[in-house]
Length: 363
Image 1 (cartoon, one colour):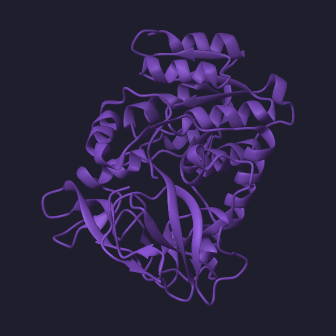
Image 2 (cartoon, helix red, strand yellow):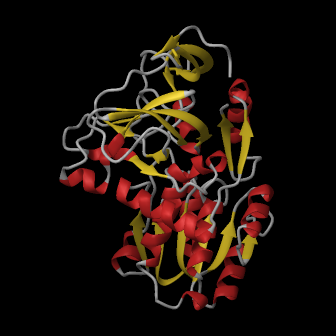
Image 3 (cartoon, rainbow, N blue to C red):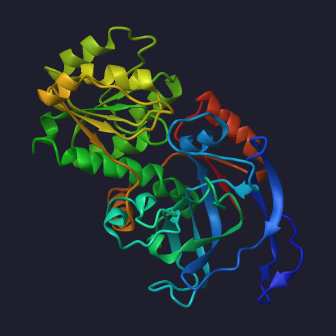
């Protein structure tokens, strides 16, 4: 960690380094910024690891999903991290200094309204923000989080590799558990396709295998398919190479998969997913393309397919994800970088030539 200027409370630095997005020209710089001062309902965390999510790339690209960036001030990127409690606000309950934590990124929500029980982004106040997307996130050495977003990490889980659980992991876990709720109670003879086997997909495969399901992994990246196989996928296909993959999947599975979890941001990938499904199969929409999706109304009205959605969810669901991951030994694959290598990490994410997740490990 770089030398800091001054201290606060006798032990904390007053300044830190952060990877910040500059809305004016859509650039990233490593800036020196103040250590946050926490509010009564916040916790100050010493970040151990922060990882990059594919949705972070939305900052740099046009999109139709409601993310609007103007000429505002730079803010710290990152919405997926874990670390150790340094200070606890007066209103924060159930946490103490030294606790290992992970958390969700939505702030300026009430946590209590009907909308917040589904997802805090849609809080009835209409003021919700995503840390790392419009306000300061976690690619910094210290960050302030809302205590109601946080869950404790078991002592024997490795903080160095835990960060992806707090977006990719919980998103994949929720997609799997929401899919499982729609499937026959016969996992050994039930097939699920995972479309996109990178950061989210390799975790979805692990969760599915922990439940006992048979899995087909589909991706355009050879590296991602290697990771899918290592994560337990029974079969893998690359549509660029295996041009008859839909036919082969239907042969392997009998009449097609019982469900397909799509974690990509690709409209073409979504368009082809229904062909992988058998009658009344579940299409789980998890990845968010930058343009709208289209499905045949007749396929849905006639129950040819069932379209469902899943996301990173709420704190109670995050707690279940951490517990399940701990119980079943599910670990994200993370390639670690230094903060000064942030732009290199971004370029690698953009290229798609990586396995699992990419992240920064702090001292």
